[in-house]
Length: 227
Image 1 (cartoon, rainbow, N blue to C red):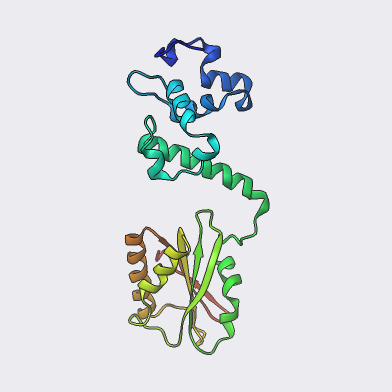
Image 2 (tube, rainbow, N blue to C red):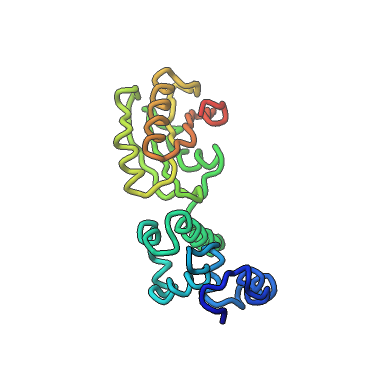
C-alpha cells in the first residue's frame, strides 16, 4: 500500500489504478481503485486513492450508487463535476444492461410516431396528442390532450409540460390529425408549435417534432426543418 500522501505519479506503474486496469482489466481492481479512476484527481494533501478509500469507508458502493447529485456533490473529494461523472457512468451502465430487455417502444422516426397515432387518421374531428420520451428515446407515456378544432388559445403549454414533469420525460413529440386531408400546417398549427417549443426550452424539455397526419399523408415539422 502506498504511503500516506504519496502522489499517484510517484507510485510504481503496476500499482496505479489506470495502468492496473489496462494490464488486468477492471475486474482486477479494488472498489477504491475503480472509484479513483472515476474521480480522476485528489485534493490538496490527499491523492485520489486516499480520497476514494475515505469515501468508501463511509459509503458502501451499494449506498453510493443510490445517492443523487446533491448528496454526491457534498462529499469531500467529489463535488459537482465528479458527481456528474459518477452519475453519468451509472446511467450508461444501466442503459447497457437494459438494452437487451427493452419493453418500451423507441421513437426514432416519423413512422414510429404514426404507429402510435394511427387511430387518428380516421377521426372526423381533430385530435391532439403528446408523446413523452425518456433520455433513451423510448416512449414512456402518451395522452390525447385535446379534441376539436385546434387553435392557439386552446392548446395550453401548462398541461402538456405538467405531464412531462410528472412522467420525468426528457422530451416530447406532438401529433394531431387533419380530417380535411390536407397535411399542411395552418397558422394556428405554426403558432402552437412555436409556443410549445419556447415553453419547452424554459422547462428544459425538448419538443422533438410535431407530426400532422391525414388518411393518406403526413407532415413532419422536423423533416421540413421547422423545428
